[in-house]
Image 1 (tube, rainbow, N blue to C red):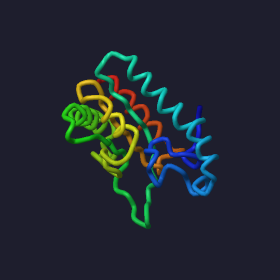
Image 2: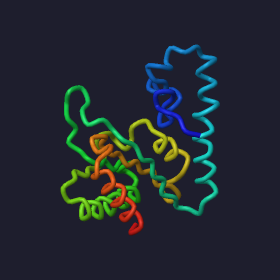
Image 3: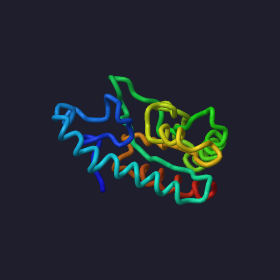
Image 4: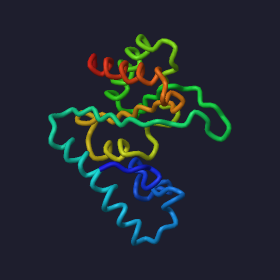
Length: 167
């Protein structure tokens, strides 16, 4: 089931002020519960079931986009690899991924834990509390929205696919 973060933000905890958007924040609690039960919990539960059914360790890649400009400041990152730096396996995975991507996309700015911290409120952060490091790697890949509809986006997707085959 697909939904938009304009309805409910699947990557936020239930106690986050960003869980509901400007469009749904003012809904009555009864309608918010419907959104949680129809979209949020089924999505998250399906990921947990999939991870639980797999051989370990699991590398969970959560791919997002981010706005190029925030609060009138241009973000100086093209692709962000978000992870928990205290988790050695996540750092190692992202080092290898960054090196591979940088060879394939030499003009792109590929940064660690930008434009967000890999430890910010998110689904991967929640799952790290459920699974130990030897069972779960939670990696978020953030792609700058300035590439939407461009040939560079195809290059990014192709390079990610190729780099992940190497890992």
